[in-house]
Amino acid sequence: MMTNPLLLALVPLVADLSRELPDHERYRRLLYSLRQLLPCDAVALLKLEGDVLVPLSVEGLSPDTLGRRFKVEEHPRLKILLQNRGPTRFSADCGLPDPYDGLVEDHQGHLEVHDCLGCPLFLQDKPWGLITLDALDPSTFGRVDLDNLEAFASLAAATVMASERINQLARNFEDQRQLAEVYKRAAGGRGPRELIGQSPVHKRMQQEIHLVGNSALSVLITGETGVGKELVAEAIHLQSPRAHKPLISLNCAALPELLVESELFGHVKGAFSGAVNGRSGKFELAHGGTIFLDEVGELPLAVQAKLLRVLQSGQLQRVGSDQEHHVDVRIIAATNRDLADEVRAGRFRADLYHRLSVYPLRVPPLRERGRDVLLLAGFFLEENRARMGLRSLRINPEAQKLLVGYAWPGNVRELEHLISRATLKALSTHAERPRILTIDAQSLGMETQPVHVEPDLQRDTPRVKQGEGLKESVDAYQKALISEALNRHQGKWADVARELNIDRANLSRLAKRLGIR
Image 1: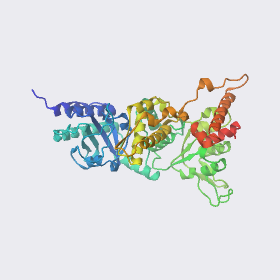
Image 2 (image 1 turned 120 degrees about the vertical axis):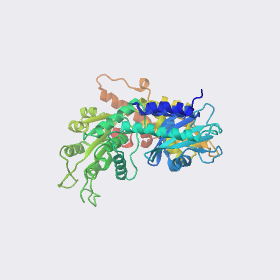
Image 3 (image 1 turned 135 degrees about the horizontal axis):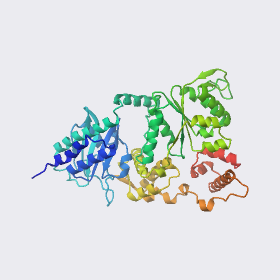
Image 4 (image 1 turned 90 degrees about the vertical axis):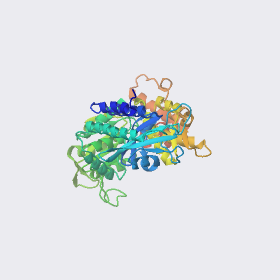
């Protein structure tokens, strides 16, 4: 007895409609069923978010694909798929670039996609996204029944609708869309940036963001340099009732000490030399919204006292003025220092520390996030592909292993810069621009970059001298590291800051405290 292949593919999906499943498992089952119906080398489910297609689940594609964000206007095949109501198959000799060229997993090189098929998904008559199928053999879809794919797409749409309704029963989609638009306008048209990751520690952090975002608590974000503390602050603001109001940011380490107070609280005309006009400070600009104080541990003690007063009473005075101004501001602060240690050392006020750290939130370093590094690499690869005007940009398996196994002292920021450098290096090895540019292990250059090598603690860490405390020993070690780096870079402080993975302003303050400059 012949069994209908469409029926075999649809039955499991129908059964899943009534089951509570995690999104990733529901989507994995959907793509598995699709490959049973239409055998091919790769399939993907992409959701349309504004003018960008976001991969939710993939099979047969490089793992970094999940981190890529495909701008519809930059990918003509995806645009055509969205414009057509039913399935679309591109001919094998189609000259339009394929977004998956070089991304189909294989073991023989960076083969280009030769057969491409896709179908849009509609929810309530509005485009929701796409399912795509790709094959390396140009004859794979030659005899495909497109009606079967369209029927499958209808049930796939029901599957994603079930998932969204389960996850957002208490949410109103239109309210969320309007909120996003308001946020976009408040951010100057940039829109909220995305926190990318699927690791358990990343998901726990996102749960904390959602929890504290809905509260009015002050948040102290801690984490190493480059982990994305500013992005976390943006996400907290977006989750809060203040999301329709501005988020104002200030990097406390990037300002001269004499200007910090003016930046925070404003000043009146003639308050100091150069104050030819009065101006509002960051707190007044953030009225009704949120202020984000990055590197808050760098604030001078005198400014810390005035900041505490604003947090306690909501009252501030501009520099040079006796007039009180009331502000209603939620504060989110961030630091890569241990502020508790700073309090014990007398460099940070204990009362301010307790005011700021009502809800402490730690951002995990990249080395704790496992294969999230590949998703983030995919995001940066797609950015560089568009920036460099490349048709396709990929990273080969050997380079992927290096990324996953690296300790990432500079975290996500280091990864972003590494991908940009590697793209340029890989491009420089070609006399003519290739259709598919591959970043290999050599292009990453990770083994030949002493900047990213952790110090040998067994060899370099000085022993605690008799009668010398921990602080004195740490200061001596920091002084030695900075002095050695200065010698290597012939006194160039910018290069020293880059090698030691420290903000240049922070390095300047540390060097002054240690008596180096």
